[in-house]
Amino acid sequence: MGSRAAGRRVTQLLPRLRSGSFARMGLLAALITAALDQATKLWLLFVYDLGGRGAVAVNPFLDLVLTWNYGISYGLLQQDTQLGRWVLVAIKIGAVILLGWWLKETRSRLAALCLGLIIGGAIGNAIDRIAYGAVADFLLFHITTGAFRFNWYVFNLADAAIVAGAGGLLYESLFGHSAAKAP
Image 1 (cartoon, rainbow, N blue to C red):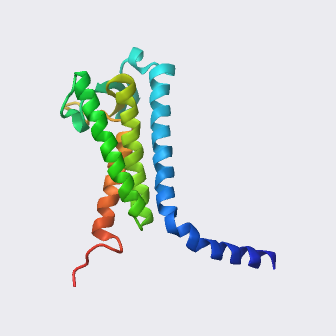
Image 2: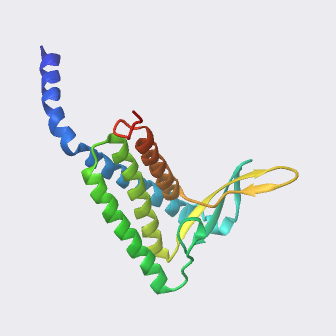
Image 3: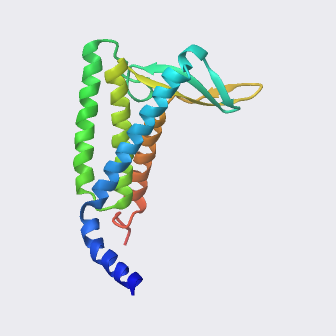
């Protein structure tokens, strides 16, 4: 009897939880993403002192190496002035506002999670730009053989969250239940 009553209460709560829970889930994902990104950066910068250690090999294909990105993705649009710094911060704030509006309107769990990842990553990188004037990047994937070395761009957890979120949104737009289907 107790478990049936509890089951009925949960069933009665589901419609109320669903009517905005996607936005709450996305906001929680954004908060966790930004917090993990900042915690990792703070630890690497001030506890581990990655800047003082130089490149640290983690395994044969991953190094920790501190770089400061004064631009946007992939180092594009490098800004070395205060005006440029604050223009990039303003762009990030505008993007977070637009993504937040999209999150509020979403009716998909996957889209909410992906938007939360993107928002959290944007906030994490914006905090860096405000605090340091640039974004701290530290993950370097590479392939090294006797003949060559291929380095990927140096990135951070916020960047990884943004890419994962964008990939999830792309997946949902192509294969999700509301995606356009061929007749």
